[in-house]
Length: 135
Figure 1 (cartoon, rainbow, N blue to C red):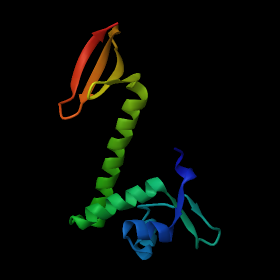
Figure 2: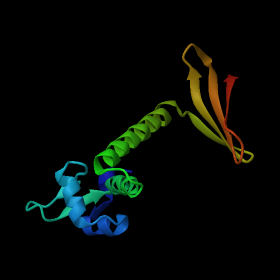
Figure 3: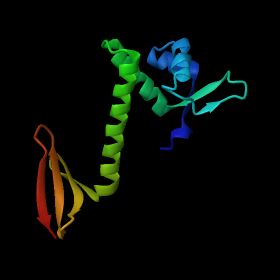
């Protein structure tokens, strides 16, 4: 999904996250968030769904006692982990097959053994298993 396909106004973001429009503007001034689109006069801001998720995450850290600066830092760290997971899935996930009570994920071949694939077996209520399978 493209980030710019789903835009929300500042009022929508405020209602959805519980963060006041005034706070959102302050966070924007501090460069913690940025709108995807802004009118020429700067009065009408549009935010992506991903920015709304970021705002919600910052707000959840604030609610548990973090300062705004710390909440933003934790959110950035969270974003970096999410980006790393996305990279892993994009680069390594070769195939997904349904199995009884779960799925088998083919994570591709080993660098030094191209005929051997790493499989992750994920079943409901069981620990994930990693196995090697020769083709």
